[in-house]
Image (cartoon, rainbow, N blue to C red; front, side):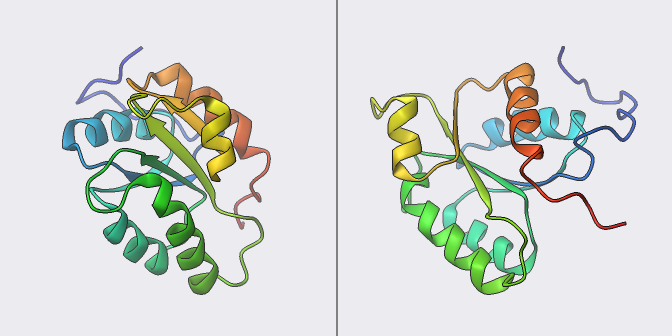
Length: 149
């Protein structure tokens, strides 16, 4: 099931309150993941590198970060600490820890457990699929606070 441009957005569903930051240096990867996440009802902000992601985290609170692992300058693994520090400094009253998801094509030879040991909350293999994203959102939404009414 691929969302197509010009289709009616889905009604507000179980993922409608999720605020997602998407970080990937490849514009096409960002666009596909953004379309999928929006189709699932998420509010999505995307950026092409860790430095601009940190700026976004300081300016806005997110529930989940999906970050490419293999990026130039600062990679997603090194970004984990930067993301968490920025979130803690900018949002000290946060009710739960920012969830960070690794997105990788597997070129580093790391296993799912390696990504978790590195500090990620979850690992998704590229190419990302709609049902894969849906499963991750379902898994983690229960650990996130309900949206303010």
